[in-house]
Image 1: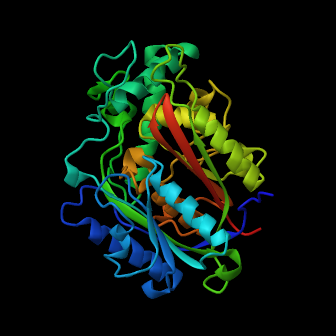
Image 2: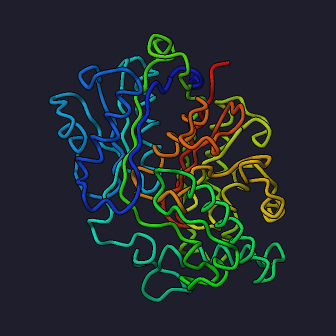
Length: 397
C-alpha cells in the first residue's frame, strides 16, 4: 500500500546564488556557488554525496553532467529532470523519493538556469503555434495570463480600475519583499501608481505585473530523517508533495474558464493529504507561489484553497498576504521580484522556506515569527495547458 512521504526525508543544507543578469558567471560558476554553500551549510564534503538530481529547464546541458562535471563528482549517478517552470521542485520530488526508498542516504538537489545567455525572453517573446479561434499564429505567456486576468475581472464583478489596482497591490507587496532580500534580482520598491501607469505588455498586465528573465542556481542536501540529527538540530522535514498534469485542452476549448488552476487544486489535494493538512490557511505559515504574473499569484492562492474563489481581492486589500498578515505570500519577493531562472525557481522557493523555518532569513526584518510549515508551488505551461508541482516543508513535531 502506498505510504506518505511525510517526515521521511530532511533538508540539512541549502544554498542559493544571487539571481539576476549574471554576465560575469558561467552556469558552472552558479552551480559551484550554490552547491558549495549547501555543502558548508550541511557540514558535508562533495565526496560524501551519493547521487544527485538536476533541475534544468533549457537545453543548456543535456544530462546530469551539468552538475556532476563542474563539481568533479565523476561517475556518480546524476539525473537531469525537466518539467518547465516546475523543474526545480520536480528535481526535489524525485530526489526525495530515492532517499525515502533508502536507495541513497545523502543526495544533492540542484535547480539552475542561465537564461540571459540564450538571448530569449521567456515571458514576452515565447511564441508557439496553437490552434484556437482567438489566435492566428501563436501566443505569448503574457497574452494567456492577460486572458486569465480579464476573465477573472468579469466573473467576479471587478471594474478595469478595481482589477488593475488589485494586481498593482500584489506587485507592490512583492517588490517590497524583494527589495529587502539581498539575493533578489529586482530590488526595487514601487508604488501602486507606478505599477498602474507602467507600459502595458498585454492588458491589463503592465511591466511591473511580469516577472523578469534571470540567471541563478539553488541547491539542497537531503538525507533520511533518521540521519538528520547527526548533521544538525535545526533540520527541516519534507511533509508532502503533489503533482498534477492537466489534459491540456484549454488551448482548443472555447469554454475554458481561466479563473482557477485545476491542476493546482489536484496537486494541493495530494500534498495536503500527505502532510495531514485540513485547513491550509491556518496550518501553513507561508506560501511561495508561482507568480510569473501578478494574476498568477492571485489565482494560485485561491486554487490552493487558502481563500475562497473570488475573495482574493479582499485578502489583498486587507494586507492578508503581507509579511505581517494572516498568510504571508512570496516573502522572498517571488518570481516577480526575486527573478525566474526556470529550472532554479522551485529550489529557490525551498531555500526561502528552509531559512524561514530555521529563523535564519538573511535580512532580520524579513524573518517570520515562529513559522512551522511552508508550501512551494510551481506551474509549468500556460493557462489551459498546465501541470503543477507542490512541496510542503515543516519543522519536526
